[in-house]
Image (tube, rainbow, N blue to C red; front, side):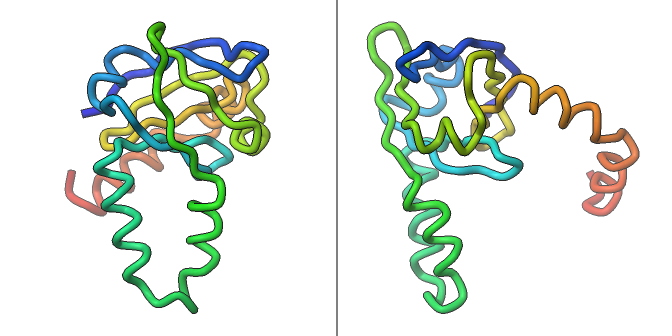
Length: 139
């Protein structure tokens, strides 16, 4: 399970170290694409393939926007020997990644956030919102 939060910096070439614990879970090759809330979503190869199969099995007329959003911005990532990945400029621009970033585990996927946006998000979410969802799903 992908859990935890790690603060990192993105270098001038767009490289960032993917935490070792996440690399172990994600595997040797993984995929990044646009996520929600202007973050980057990172999935293992298996999770990416499963997601792709589910989406491609849906009617094109109803899912064309979703397909364009996810697949046009997707990138295959292979960490180098230092554990760094190169995030494409398109994804860095989408998520407003400049220097300070937060890499978080959300159970089945990883999200990469601009640090300032991550801090803002955390200030806006309330405990009552979390509890409401937990109660809704009886967690």
